[in-house]
Length: 71
Image (cartoon, rainbow, N blue to C red; front, side, top):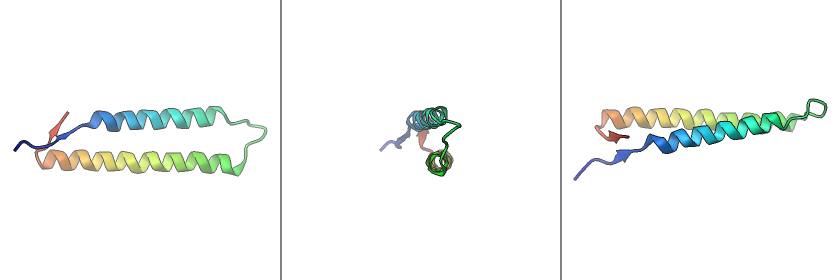
């Protein structure tokens, strides 16, 4: 039985998409009418990005240790 393949391309695409979303959200801010909620939404997206990036890193390190093929 072969080891499963760990595909980091999907994780990298997720990070890229999330960064694009955050950039879009920031670009849409109007300096004259910024609300606390605007920052909260952006903070939630950033937090999600950080958590997922850390999770992807942990999975990658674990996969390498376990001899899983990383592509």
